[in-house]
Length: 209
Image (tube, rainbow, N blue to C red; front, side, top):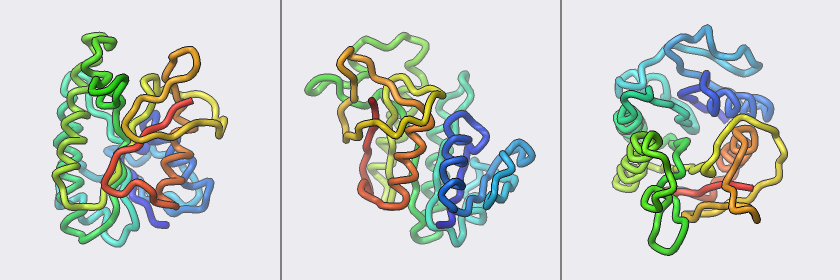
């Protein structure tokens, strides 16, 4: 497959890039500083602007899918809302490349009718990025493109590639100790699996141990 990846130099994006290339996919990694993109087989690093729908449309022309692992600055988390809206516009203009978004966990349910965001468990410092990602998901649901929003577990960190995890839809996945965790390495496996064998068109899914 020909995949366009935004955010390829970030924590999640770099692991998604590694997983994609390990399976033989061709990746166009769009970055502000292409020299920072890992030099892996099958990767073409280009400079691009996620805040320009026209630039995105040019970058994704002819691709099979677009993956956004874009992470906004901590002091302006709503940039991820604008960036994703631009990706949606560009995908619609190109007439069909699939868009897969690395999402957040805040909109997952921890009890019937109660999201993680509404549960009161999250520290105040987490709320800006949580609210921005809730807006991203809401906007995707209103779009007409083929999208998938992939929510990680509550704790989403670099770790081991275990290949042992569970998938779900809209409920936070926790282990027997009531811990909700996933490594970025295992998350990348499930994301690339979804690209290769789509099961969640126009919906959200999630992952955890």
